[in-house]
Image 1 (cartoon, rainbow, N blue to C red):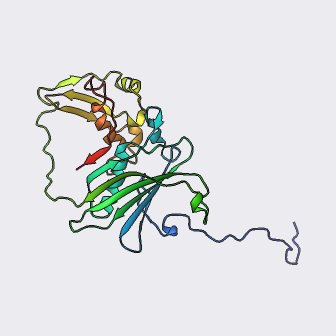
Image 2 (cartoon, one colour):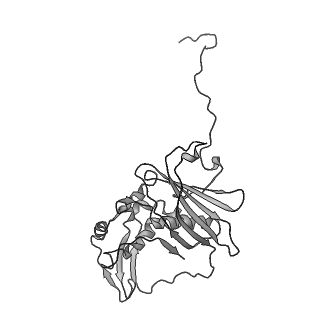
Image 3 (cartoon, rainbow, N blue to C red):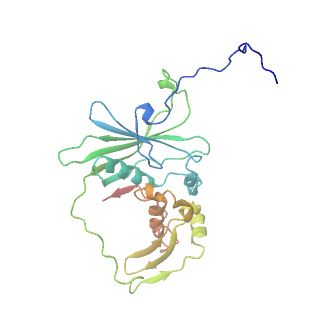
Length: 266
């Protein structure tokens, strides 16, 4: 077709939008590249380092498989992972002590914001770590801090430098252990569900259990669906949680009382 010889007449309706940096680095934070710990910030006074994250069942759907007494909780092993990673970034990779004071409940729809505040090192290189959480919601616009939901203290602990005296475990000379009797695991997770430990597929890592003289041995494995990101963790919380399942009632000992781990050391 024939084109006109004069310049096209036109009106422009596109909006000019300035580029906004929405990632962690653009907001002045340092990304951690960790699945459950988002970013870190060194405070200007040099006395604390802040680690931040946000968890939800939408962004981390495997956490929905950890339900106790009808409530979806971040497992205690998740707190250990958060503390261990913060310590590793600051040269204190040993979780010397970590005590949970309140559970972290994960709501069905909204998310939960998490902060780990790590203090400066003392003369022995130890650092105090405090873990806080706050659910999404409330008026969180600038100038409306008073209306935002309050932070709740969930855990407190001590991070320490590596001792330097540890040696690699030699392992057992025979596996399964000599003299240990194997515990049948048929329907084990159904039995645990009856005790209000409703573990979904991501947390069903228990494979075999043996009971010895005052000792319990177990084989655990991370389910295939969780292995893609496993290398990004120090130790995947679902795998470490599965290592504790033999201690639950009805697994290796019928007389054990119901429990949840709340204190960690070493």
